Image (cartoon, rainbow, N blue to C red):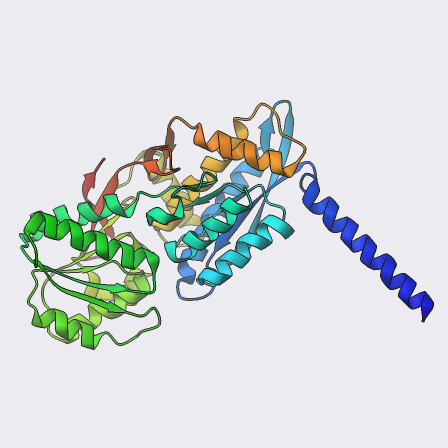
Length: 394
């Protein structure tokens, strides 16, 4: 019994020492730089996680295919660590903590959705670990958080883009909104849209403002109210899986008018779920795949050839977000030994990037870690392709 207890104590001490060494020094292998991904591989929007991982894996092949990242006179291989946030806020926080404390990453890509990015951003900021969200557009993700960045434009910019496009293209005077009240992204963008629309068209010009829960499948009550108010169009700032249900159910209830969507429509899975019901509709987003040129076209063709479908905006934004982190690391004159110093060096380098040429456009960061960049409005063609309709720049 004593021998067993002695051995147990020895093993416990060794475990504690190993954990201390793991978190206190550089990465497990001093020649490997570990970057984490906090993405939804399961849950409500798994296609978002898939797109992020696919884009990341393609980029990782490029990086390590040329021997890794060169800092000074030394080369470092790169390892990507993926944690599933299950499309849940609490899981995103837990994934961030695991990436920081156990996986020992020097930076985090994601979460994508603002519902996960806002709380996870708080965790990364408190633990002084640089995080860059590819897709989150809610201002709270980066607000007053010096360690947090993003590759997407913000909703205070996206809201007026949707307002002005719908007013011009549909000749609309009135609007209705349906949104997910449990989703920071959807709720925040809905409120911004209402404010901007009524500023443009006058009080009461948003004739219906209907909410629902994240898990809801039946939207007939909200849509009946909306259709009864006779708006000129319906604004739907929802994730693509909800969009497909809302648009189909609206048509079943007799709605024949247009919809205006937001960047959360931009998943490659939208047309699989929505089909003919979504053809001819418009949404604001980060890039248009159809008709792309230059590096964007190269990225799209490579991705399509490798994975069998056109990359959506999440894939393109993940590519840009990860390249931003890699560019920040490549710009360092030396790689610090301590992980805390490595994270701080990346944070500082990200903030100092004067301009970045991405596949989703040219961008530079403001003082909040938000990119100054253009938005795109796309039209869903009769073939289901996301075609360029208009570009709007700050």
